[in-house]
Image (cartoon, rainbow, N blue to C red; front, top):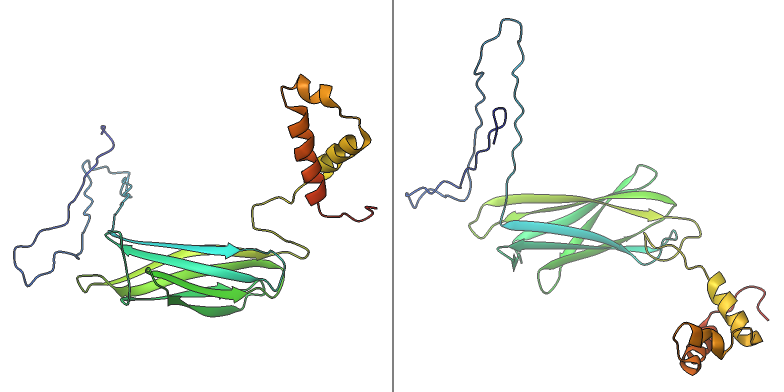
Length: 216
């Protein structure tokens, strides 16, 4: 790849002896200095190793409410060769509370190969969730997987994380303009809209809008 960068791809060793498993092993990287230097004592190399596995693990923390006291659902998925890993793994979550305390949640297997569990927030703050899995592959080799997630609780919070609360001021303005007659057919025609359909949609939006403090 260049004078100072080398790329090597190592395939899984195929051992002909049937008594020896070819689905696990140890790879060793040996770094050797190419040029001797009297002043340089450290090894002038960086080694970056990437590996790929046919056993994948994905976890999610789902929140429908950000207020303290709400439940946080934990879902984990284990797949080997895109096939659900069932009855061959144990999945759990280590939850760290905002106060620093911890709690373990066992994720139970569900139909389809997913694992599910939940916990309830008790105080405002950030909750760190370390979801872990331990089991055996189809070939009987042990494996471990883990993923770090976060959940949060906010006083007065509602809705899902990452969603900003809706701003009803534009809706209130449109409802006011329609009800007062300030917006007429000419306005909608100017923007290429059917006046009757547009007013019908706005009227339905105004009817479905929840009452706000101070509404008559």
